[in-house]
Length: 332
Ligand SMILES: [Ca+2]
Ligand SMILES: [Ca+2]
Image (cartoon, rainbow, N blue to C red; front, side):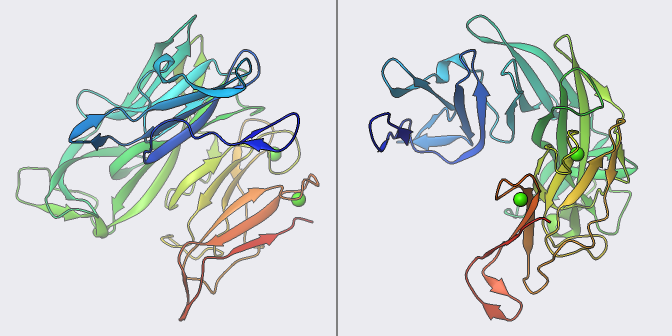
C-alpha cells in the first residue's frame, strides 16, 4: 500500500504468489529500501521456478518495479543486509553439505561475492526428520562440547553501536538439535538411525566482524549463553536505553533445560565494554496458563521504555480451547 500525496493509499500487488520464508529491506543510495523475498523452490505446471523476488519503489512512475535480476540467488533460510545496504549475507550450504554463510558486497550494478564462511562437520548420522519416515544423512557438528545435528545458520542481524567492534558486526544464529540422552552418536552406515523427537533444540550465536569485506570470526562476547533455547527469531536493538545494542532472543516457552518464565525472551544486555551478559528476567511478567508462548521486547507506545509483548503459539489454554491472544505489558 503506497500512501498518496493527495489522499489515501494506492494498492499494488507485485510479483507472483509464493511461500516466502526470508524477507528483508535493503537500503539504497537514495535512502529508500528494496524489499527482497525468498522462499523455497516451487513449481508451476510441472516446472520448477526461481522463487527470489525483489521490489523497489520507483518515484518517477509512483509504482513498484521488479528488481529481482539485480540480486544474487537469495536464501530462504536467512537473508540479511546491513544498515547502509553495502553487504548482503545469505545462509549457504557448502559443497560437502557444510553449513555457513555467503556475503555479497554491492558493486556498481551487481552484487559481488565478498567472502564466505562454513562450519566443518565432524561426522554424519542417519536421521529421520519430524516430517519424514525415511532416514536421511545428517551432519553432526562439534560445537561448545555438544554434538549438534540438523543445524543451519537460520537467522542473522547486524548489530550497530555494539561497543564490541568499530566495523560492522554480524551475528548469526546457528540453530540445531542435541540428542536428549546420547553424546556419542553412531555414524551413518552402521544400521542406526535417530528420530528427531529424541533430540532437543539448541541455538548458539556466532559473531563476525566485517573487515575490508571479509568475515572475521570472533570469540563469543556472550556471558552465560543459554544454548538450550528454542527460538526462531532474535534482534539486536538497544532495549535498556543506554545507547548500546543488546541481543534479545524471542524464545518459545517450552523446551527449556530448566524452568523459565512463560514466554519471557532471553536478554543479553550489553555492558558497554564488549560483553553481552545474560540478564535475570525472572521478574518479567509471565503467561503460565498457556501451553506455549513467545515474547518480544519492543517499545510499543514509543515512550522510550521497552515493553514486553507475549502471545500464545497455540489455541489451547491449559485445559481450555481458545483463540490465539496477545498480551502487552507496558514498561515502567
Ligand atoms: Ca542497551
Ligand atoms: Ca514503552
